[in-house]
Image 1: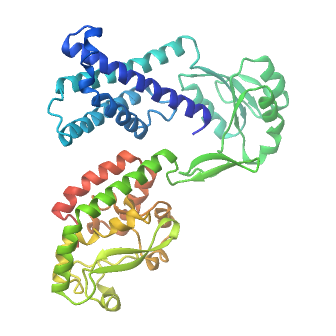
Image 2 (image 1 turned 60 degrees about the vertical axis):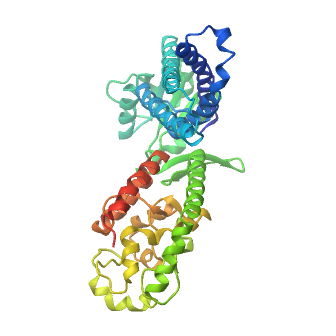
Image 3 (image 1 turned 90 degrees about the vertical axis):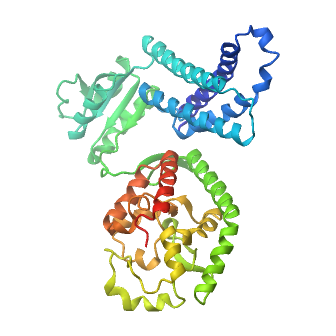
Length: 460
């Protein structure tokens, strides 16, 4: 997130916080039909409402991208605000129940969040309208370069409502894209940029001509114009691009893994809270399972196995033991009965599984100790399942990308059939999770995991 986007995001968050305060007093006034001055004597009875609603609203706003400072469609902001209002309502209802706030007025809560939603939506609409009327949302762009991609970029820019495509400056002897005003050739770039009203210059340069545009690039910078450089000369990939400086040298970073620092920090906070609560609440269940395992078969209660984590880091994954103690040694004799494609081994009626182990696997209770792996930071609640190093050694190149995020206890594979899905589709589901990752996606996967565990879909 650049400085401009960060400033816009902070401004949006501050304005929403102010509107939430105003919405509270507006809702209180409407609910109890009092004048402002008399109402001030009793409003503090419900003071917990805005004190809890404001941070909750801002948290949901961050998760849904309201405060990232990005250019987004108004409809997208409206949907995000609606989900923020619904999420805040759920948190307020849960807090009222847990804190036994019997005096809490449900009509007041509904009015409060309705006021907050429509005020935030109206403010965004008014700001967009004022900026549009003053022409501040439109920018005049000039495209510099050549090649087939230049035509695609010009067409894309012309289709954006906030862009006025002034024209194109082309490489020597290169024709302009059809329907685009030809401003001249690269050698005249400085003169053209001086004579035209331009807000930004977009460079679309074939890889073999990069050196030729240095003069035009420096001229645009010296003239104070915003510049963009198309990376079309690089292979088209799924990576997200970040900018950073190291010792004064600019770098472009490419990564397919999630990188947004706020979202990742919230994901880690979610992991810590969920794993700590799960370990505490499940402690009595741990004792019952431990006794059952000991009574069923000789051997330790827990089974530790080396797995591959983030970018290949090895760690010990913990589970309740569900197999006989010499299960690893007996695996070679069962290889020809593998029912899963790829390098993984899955067998429906594995003779190494104990009686208690079958129940633990069917109910996924054997996975509970992995909340410890989550708590210490080796795993996440949601993420691709951690593979064995021997499986990773047999991965194809594109399979390894699933190691670019922390492994998890549950993921899309777990809620989509698990062992009923073949290996290739399993890998594609994990990569789809990485490419589409958001905190909201994690929450949806966790909610879908509950019925999948209860009904034991795909568990073996």
